[in-house]
Length: 424
Ligand code: AMP
Ligand code: GLY
Image (cartoon, rainbow, N blue to C red; front, top):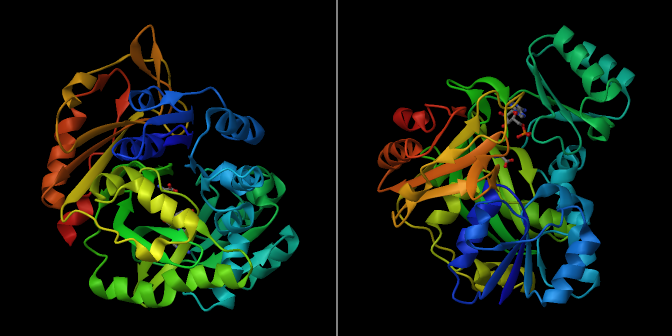
């Protein structure tokens, strides 16, 4: 088979690595890809939002399956463009990707179908949002821009004054652009966060092993929100009891709700969960693999990813026995110092040869480029260093050891990825 992967981050590198293992695959292309993905795929200079160019390319090259890694093209309807041309594509259509594309939509869906989530109200008028906030007695309170905002459209407001300023930022100053035309105001929840990614074929859902992200830039969960500074899998807090609850009230319920709405979901649903004192609740849905969740989940998956994805596209997921290794993985993101605000790019990086032939160690590229044959930094999140181990502690030890194998002048990382393991 010939495969096209759309995207350019660490997530797409992990997908490309997984696809390359499939005996069914003969050639991989990635648009636009990055310097690391080139190890497995021919990278082509087409942007993820250039839907017609992507479909032209898929037609020209006789691509058998296109895998969309990123949220923006999914929410923008790239799958519909491919399907209209009779091209096989893995990911939700536009009318289903709205599960991630509109938080107001997803909250209304959960309310209508009794899927546990934080209490909320939606607003498309700043004045009404302010009036509502003034009737609220419980702080902190959470404001969310409705649309995609690079994971940054969520404000946790400690006081009424903070919340008023937040409404201004989101709805009036349009800090997140049109994503803030509508806003969700919701109850603040407490508890452990867990991510569960799942394969979905429109009616059947098969959850993958659990993971936990670290969204803040600094040690001890301080500093600004980022795309994710590291992950571990599985989460020791995702117990059998939690799993049973989520299977009963959240996973299948979400898939059934989407089908009932005439929006059957095919692809990946990423459940962002909060394990609250009252039980697990949905924080958010994403319509694609997480980044860097994919970098710890995919290395532990035993199945041929192409077989699973084809089963999703063909509505035959029920027949798949999804299996994960009985071990653990930790991913530590190496970032450019200053991320997520301001940072230098183009810095030379050394040490990649250390990963060669090292079973259970992975160096996934996120923001890198190649200049005169030399890898250089090309983004805020630069690399995801993943290592497996028999258990979480061993995986963490291995991952941190491997972070030392790579050097670059402005290398920055968190030193407490997976610290929660010690509290389990
Ligand atoms: P989201 O993009 O919805 O996952 O939000 C980003 C982050 O904000 C989450 O990972 C949580 O840490 C936090 N968050 C979002 N909603 C809530 C909530 N209702 N209560 C507490 N924290 C929240
Ligand atoms: N790591 C969080 C995300 O991919 O949205």
